[in-house]
Length: 92
Image (tube, rainbow, N blue to C red; front, top):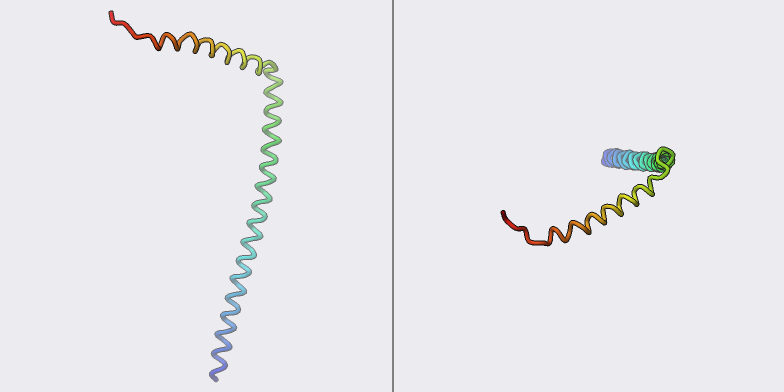
């Protein structure tokens, strides 16, 4: 009779171990599926960003030239203003 409770406890323990292993395997499978979905979404996002860039270039084909010109003008303005900021201010 002492063997029966021990074997029941052993079976319960083994069942519990199997359940935990199955839960772990299921969680790993879900994680792999999620990783695959993330990879697909990232690839789709990259494609969409490339398409947005292409469409923006169609709307403003000279955007790069305009940006360069604006940066040049800002640099000139900065160069003109910095000496003025360095001068001591005078009071009226």
